[in-house]
Image (cartoon, rainbow, N blue to C red; front, side, top):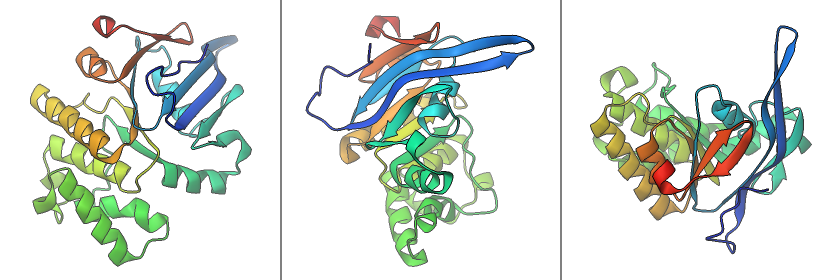
Amino acid sequence: MTAESPASPDKEVVLECRQLVKDYRQGEQLLRVLDGVNLQVRRGERVAIVGASGSGKSTLLNLLGGLDEPQAGEVLIAGKSWQSMQEVERAAWRNRQLGFVYQFHHLLAEFTALENVSMPLLIAGASKREAAVQATAMLEAVGLGPRLAHKPAQLSGGERQRVAIARALVNKPACVLMDEPTGNLDADNAQHIQQLLDELNRDHGLAFVLVTHDRALAAQQDRCLLLAHGQLQAQQESAC
């Protein structure tokens, strides 16, 4: 059964996976982490995936992002299958259509906030001036206009995560994948990040898929899915 949003059937599907299977070998044993996972995410939709540690949440996110290969099944981003692409094409499509936000920001320490956020645009072929203009606008959108010239070490944890979010969004991707985006933040900063995500979702119409242990964060999304026994199951808000 496909984990499909019933609320917006008229909106474009920006991310879809079909019958994903992923195995890992532990010694002589084969461990099946994902067992025929199906998912559809539509434009502007916010989807949370929860589950116990070791249930395969991060594995699923890596497959959705084309960073790992399944044993079976396929993933489509903006209508194109990862499995149909060579690595060079895949990297270009990933840069154009997907944003990534992790628990740890993975910013480049030697570059400023502006330079970090400009990077995806430069990789996509934008001029340095054009990249700076768009990166500045995105940093201003996340409330960091006064911090453009600051390097990560000069920023607070919440500010670094906002830079990471700006970097993920600067190419205006079809979907943003997030792995524990508030997991390394205190309660106040986590709440600020959630409010920021709500604003960016509303203003830019971007889809989000986030993996989290934070049940309160999960409950604020449009859908909450539980990954258990290799399958995604829809959850009621009270269960998240």
